[in-house]
Image (cartoon, rainbow, N blue to C red; front, side, top):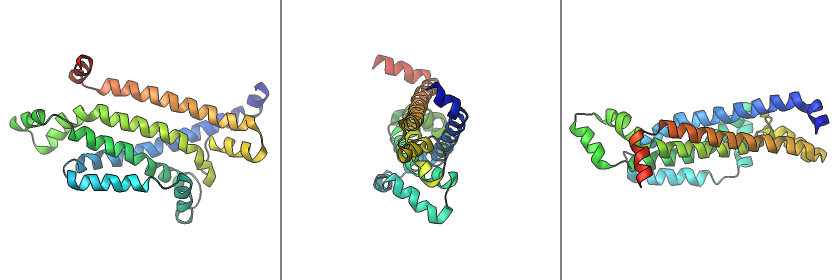
Length: 214
C-alpha cells in the first residue's frame, strides 16, 4: 500500500480534485435549475405531476447511454460528463422542492398574504424557508448519487477517480480499483454528513422545535 501511494499519490490527489470538480459543478447546475423550476411547478400542480413523471422516465435511461449520447454533440472530456451528471441531479431536487413547497401549511401562507405579502414575498419569506429541509434532503441525495456516478466520467475522458477504476479493470490490478472506489465512497460520506449539517443550520428554529415535539 505504501508503495502504491509513493507511486500514485500525486495522481490520486489530482483525480480526487477532478472528481470533486465534476460532481460539484453538476450539482450546482442542478440546484440552479431544479429549485426555481420546482417552485414554479408548485403553482401548476396538474402539469407538475406529469412533468416530474416525465423527468423520472427519462432518468431510467442508463447512465452510460447518456454519456455516449453527448459524445457526438460535445465530444469527450469534462463538459459532457458534467452535463450528463447534471441531468441525473435534477429529479431528487426538483421533486423535493415541489413537494416541500406544496406541503407548506396553507394557513401560514394565507396569514402572510393577509399581512400584504406578494406572491414573491410569500415564496422567499414563508414557503421556501419552510420547505428548505425537504429541499436540502433532495440536494443531499443528488450529491451522494452524483459522487458515485461521477466515476463513469472516465468512460468519456472526463477524468476523476473513475480513471483508476477503469485502469484497474483493464490491467487486472485490484489496487487501482480500490484507489478509485474507496476515495469516492469517502467523498460521498463526507458530502452526506456535511450537507446534513448545513440542512440543520438552515432549518428555521420553529421547524426544529416542531420536529422535536412531533
